[in-house]
Length: 157
Image (cartoon, rainbow, N blue to C red; front, top):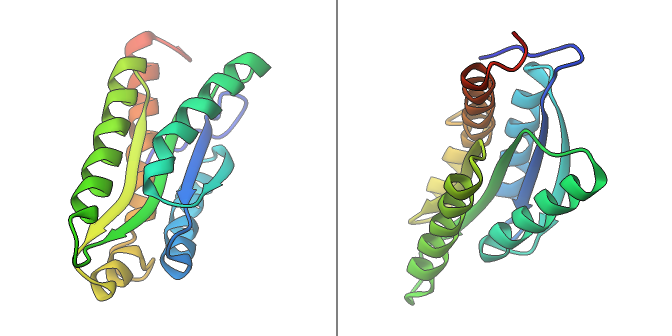
């Protein structure tokens, strides 16, 4: 993992959906652990569910620019568990699509840690820091992309 540390340390936006509290706690713990380990800082925004995440990202990005402290990258966290209706396909597909559109349109380093799973056990395993640690993986992906963007733009050289 990239270790940024120092005055050029990235400032990351973390947006978490709290629909499943136990899963959200694990995802957040993994993500914030990875961010801190890299020497970066973060702000946390909480929203009710995965469909609210993309709008919260855009609102927070624009507000940060207006305040004069833009974010270097974004980590999104949440969980969508398949149920008995087609709601799963809508929530998982549309949240992922919107996040990808935001990342590409804005050249935004983004780590998508919104789990899309078949059942609670899959969610638990993927969120657990001791197992798959997908929150940490999303943060590491965002930080990797921050480092790539900085390298390609010649920032910090």
